[in-house]
Length: 314
Ligand code: RIB
Image (cartoon, rainbow, N blue to C red; front, side, top):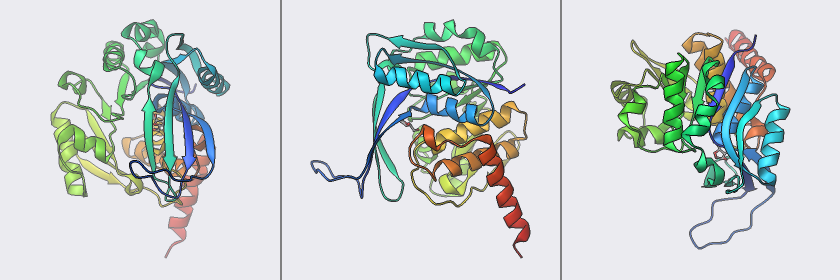
């Protein structure tokens, strides 16, 4: 039986332009190609988990419009349970304007639309889906009240809570205390702790501060340097993989989705982070959010190629 992962979060349509560089304020520049690509941190993590082998239920809101219909069709096509995604006639589906430069870095502006109308009552209506999951995945592109309700339900049913605090915002201590795994990147960690994460020692200090605030385990993602896992007993750096960067969009989502699947499969935490690092690395080699998310077979082939290369090196 595949493990069950529930996701409460956002669904956006990403309007992506590749550009030689980012414009300055007031400047118009000529970009390259344009793409309309399904995205949103919640939906991306749901797709990542489904491609990596989980049974996935998603809770969220889209508008009663073409982008919303496209998202629903796309997720159902991947076997994701969309019965808890409401079509909201009073708001548009979330849209993200994304510029991707030649180095693969991005800048994103979000119009949240229906995502910000997700209510605690929507989450309560999905209680059964949350209760039957091994892991609940959350991000911060939907209202905090909905996130808090989902966390409370998960805790009541003994479901493991994984929070990816993106985009960054301050979080109430009462929420942090209920999070089993917090997965921030460097800038999110800085916002949450006030510690500038510019080297491994600072990363360790910041993660320890989050642990002291009551988080169970902190997994601080460090881009191509991998991730720092800080739990009750130790801080362990799990190195990342060097790949050719095309677009970093959704690399974090691939990591989070991969980690959730491995965790739900009861892989060790070190193995789960390595698996997540591989999913994130593969995602940056392709353009866009959801189309860049790797399958289970791709991640396994990548990890076995890396192991073989290591064995062969002198
Ligand atoms: O994490 C990447 C995602 O952030 C994009 O797909 C975009 O929709 C924004 O939510």
